[in-house]
Length: 425
Image 1 (spheres, rainbow, N blue to C red):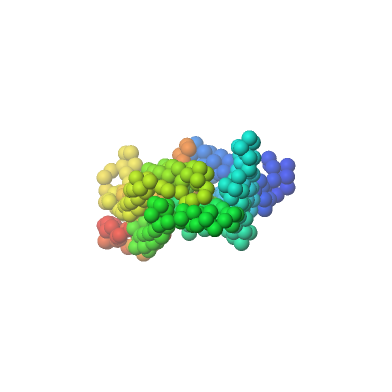
Image 2: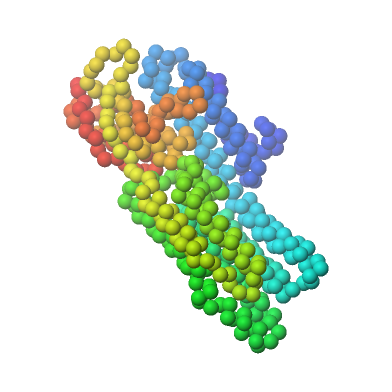
């Protein structure tokens, strides 16, 4: 058979387009890229009707099952390469995080030095720079402590290996408040007289800092509620979650399937705008906590409510709406018998994020007491089976005639309610 996908390959540089050792970020990326190319070539070959052994060509069912098994085997090898890429991701993530944090500190230093020309170096410049350095040291320490889980990004990654929108927003507000407090603390330490210290401590008044504390409380509460809400809905079977290969920045603005999500995007953008306003206030008045207008606090509150409402209604369990006998052109109308193909129509059969070949191959239909893997049916550019709304499977000969219950089990492990059909002799 020509074109069979073998994404494993060796690990020496220069073989097949580069290192594929899987032990370094470059090698893992290259190995995954070549595995994807091999799988796509195999799928397109089968979609064009080539590569099936001549001994199976007389039986459409046998040929389809053989093609599905070959694609499933290649998809497993592709999944291994994706897992290898995900395993080396923490190394690259922690390095980039440290570089990015200290680059921002350096940029702040350069900005302070350039703006100090003519006006001189002030206590405010020292305070903001020292606070940024202390915060960067904290991030560096957290990166070392969580070096095997992605460094400082580890607390922001959910159980599904995606960046959590709510956790990221809450962490951003915690970092901003810490930066403001550290700046004020340095000012207090450098204050020359008791009167100056009293004026600085007056900047910690609850009335002036109430808006900042309220937004911090909103962000933290949303992170806790979103986690509890999602975990509870997963346990109740109302949400299907498929783990990702690795976290991506796009997770902050998209759903599990990678499509843009309005509620997530508005929550991130609104908080980013208010956070930018807060940092500008810190830069303008480093000797006091920033005063946030209550209109911005209300805006952040509405955004949080919209985000949580989206979490509450998102997802759903798979549902079978109908089951019919799959009829080829020219066939006569007939009841369902063993050996026939049945078409299961419904929704939620392919959860968001489960559209990769190896996860599509994990979709199973239980017909009576028999578990039937859903065959992969390739077409140019993708698969005709399974899809989110339609599955086609054969009724195995082990199924006894009579009333039979049909259930679909998705790649996320969710199972539909039973749908009863009648199988004839």
